[in-house]
Amino acid sequence: ETVYAYGMHLLPGVIDAHVHMRDPGGTDKEDLRTGSMAAAKGGVTTFLDMPNTSPATISQKMLEEKLTLASVKSVVNYGFFVGATLDNMAELKKVTRTPGIKIYMGSTTGDLFLKDPGMLEAIFAETKLPIAVHAEDENIITRNLEELGLTRNVTDHSKIRTPEAEASAVRKAVALAKEYKHRLHLCHMSSELALAEFEDHADLITAEVTPHHLFLNESDYMNLGTLAQMNPALKSASDNAALLQALLDDQIQIVATDHAPHRFEDKCQRYPDSPSGVPGVETALPLMLDLVHKEKCTMEDVVHWMCEGPALVWDIMEKGRIEVGYDADLVLVDMNKTVALRGPHMQTKCRWTPFEGREVTGWPVRTWVCGKEVYREGEFDLSRPGVEVMFDHSRGGYWAGIDG
Ligand code: DOR
Ligand code: ZN
Ligand code: ZN
Ligand code: ZN
Image 1 (tube, helix red, strand yellow):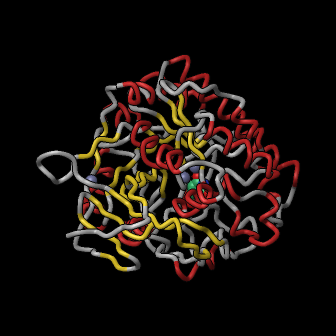
Image 2: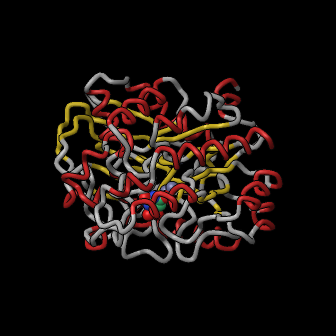
């Protein structure tokens, strides 16, 4: 087939290295079918899913159950993190077919918060897989909560989950990574204070930022209320600027969404009964392309942060289905298309977005996974399942990938 693409840009498919597809156990919010369709629509051809499902992904057996589910339901390529608990060290030491171990250093959706600091250190000391952390210090969160008293206003969320809480956890994780020379990835950095806790050190420590921490801040509670509630919490406008600068400086290597769908009705409960998290897998590429349109970064930067960066950080190798040569995970992008983001237009099961009404220029229009077109201007070909991606952790770090 000949594809006519005059005036368009053909980019590598986006790798979203941080999503919550809610499958199994949370399929009222999202599942691997709806979430992967949202991904394809957003130009995302591979996602890495987090372990805080029900049940949580904490063993080889549960990981393989998810891989089997995805092989049937996902229209894009996939991989699954394994979660650390107080008693699954034996699994963490031998688990395979995973990008790495996810550790929750603070409480959030699900029950994977690892409350024992001794266990945290033991995982750095005794395991080999790269470690990704949700870095928020639960002691500081608890202290802030106690000082504030009864919290009924969502703006308190940012007074509880402060830059200090993030910076403190980042400091601990970075110290452990250096002590045990263990590959560490800092998920969803949200504050300038936390950025000061680690250097540009990508053979050992890498970091990510979400579109919502780049483009939203505390002033957005006014319009969004609890729809703007997520962990880590939104910070200030100057944090937005510092995070973009950290991307431009290569201190942060990847943009990942932390796609965390919740039902609209649940999000509209009064704080703090409302759950934390926002969807993002299908809005990330348009939001980043809009930055290109506004000349705040280049198209090459976006490819760096959303395609090459995550592939190098997580050592992604594609098994693919084509026997000779490389297969094609591609997205065709129309930089002349301007459309406002709208909840009802969303493919994600939750059908709302914290970016409601925002006009963005630069849209994915067609998406190919392993050489097969799965999305074309509003239409899907669901007969094309994605494939499991493989991870080669033998190269040792992000820069090793670039140089080699
Ligand atoms: O806001 C969040 N939502 N942060 C997390 O760390 C988890 C996520 C979720 O799963 O809902
Ligand atoms: Zn997290
Ligand atoms: Zn997350
Ligand atoms: Zn492929």
